[in-house]
Image 1: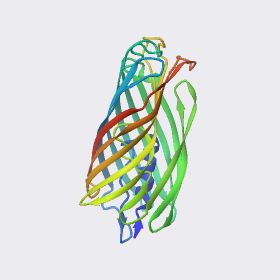
Image 2: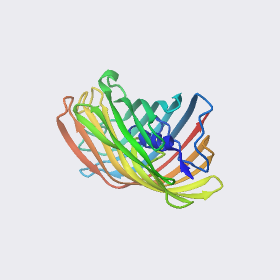
Image 3: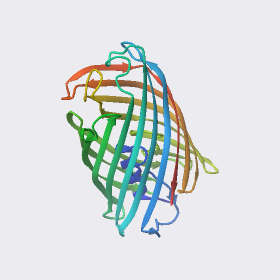
Image 4: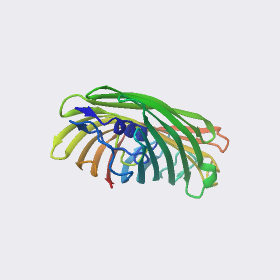
Length: 314
């Protein structure tokens, strides 16, 4: 049995920057025969989901809860036999609800945040075992009312993967993007697809409910199209603020470390329905001025999270 090499790469790259949907996040499938050539020149996948973090305390006072909703589309094209192009676009709506008097600029430091991510990732199979991947990545992230043009970030990523055995694909790389009023952001791209037993695998392909999550899952195949997983990861959001509040046209940031249990039902690669429950172990909120000067940094307590997502390929 052998791994679908390109699938493992695409899943990890998608999770590394765009999280839920901007790059094809197909789950790795084991095949008894070599991977066949794609019958269609262009394949599409549409995904959507939602996640809610329940209210939790901010260290210096006040509370916060967050709801996120995502929608995205990916187009995968086989340009040549060993060269594939993946074009992706995803939209994420994050609704923050603060209560009480916080140190982040009053009761409502920010409310609705919209994020648009775009990518064009190439995958080049240089041999039967090695794949090189890379391409540009762009994003816009802003609070409602903020200047769209002031919310742009851009960069790229590059890496490689290796088929280390019939049940193992390993690889990695890095991405680099600009960051709103801050130094360049450098982040890892991790590719791990390890079929430990017939029913258990370790995977860097994380089907995020609604967000930008880099993570890892231990997945168990329940049979009949069902699987369950235990996972953990890191999530990063940075966005331009509107011209009101304590930091007019400043920058807000939300980072967290979530852990979850996932239950998924799927029919081949065409349709998948995911349910997730877990908690954010730790989180941090930052408020910076419009030139990047730190104003305040606040941690928030652990909080329960729930989410669901679905995808369909055609």
